[in-house]
Length: 179
Image 1: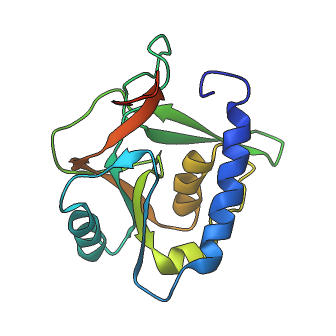
Image 2 (image 1 turned 180 degrees about the vertical axis):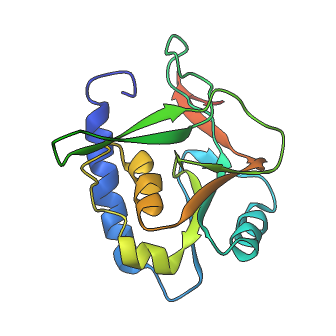
């Protein structure tokens, strides 16, 4: 479905699901989300929480997951990470944001990015409570891209920890296939 026009339905459902999740966030420092199609490496929790502790301006940190779209898709097997550029229109009070996917993976290190997937993702609970997860952003359509943009607009940063290499799987012919 990721390569069809119905992909937008998944996006709508993500806003709905994450809007429900935010209602159940306990009082704690961080929210750690692992989606059901992601397998994480050992020490992921420690690495992501350490990054948030070390960098007070960092609102969200993520692991690396690769795009699992069909092999003929131009984004196949690229990291699901974006840089985001904001545009303002002259004489009109309209703003847009465009996300551009990263085309390379680094072996290690922490790097600021524009936004990321939400498959292996840690953010400060206070930010989730302030910004909410299920609120749509008019300037940028997709749920995961919109989160990074909303963080930026609220004065926070988002980063990827390149050493947290997640496995992202699809079911092909009733077999689990990782990318």
